[in-house]
Length: 211
Image (cartoon, rainbow, N blue to C red; front, side, top):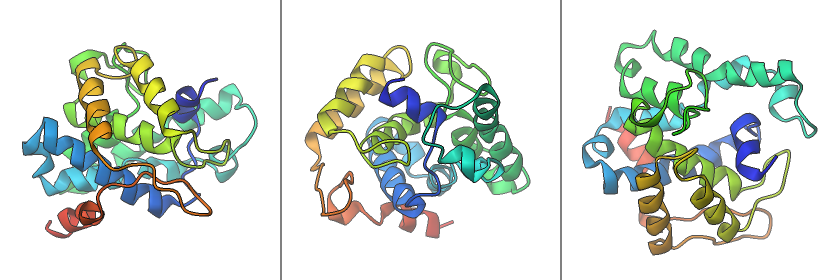
């Protein structure tokens, strides 16, 4: 499987989860500000971005961080996490809207081959289509239990190749253009992280705090 396909099925949610949440929420909000300012202004969107994989609490640790190939049963277990996440946030009225759309829809694909519902094209909520791009990029460009981080140029190539199949093609073009405009790719001695301008690094937390 290629990097993006691995991203769709195996998530390192127990490895540096907090860092991933900060990075991806910040990047997704930055992207939303460009393509849907009304969504970026809604603090519940930030909650959805941060809680996108809350359903992974129902997936065994061994499955979530497994380094070898997944069995059919393990794949089925992974594919249940958007359903479980939706059920969890449905019990919290403020989250039973746009945040739920992120949680339930961020693994759907433009061509209908995603999960859990197999939604296609614009039937996938816009906020989920926005988040899917940021999430894919962040996962590919940071170390995971099952592989090392990819160089940013390879991640960009993968997203470009999947525009129109995995991703909304118009959003993918805008997202890649945005990446070219941002300062990305700073690397420290132990991990590779996507870096946005420092002033924006706490944006996700500040938006969430306003609820």
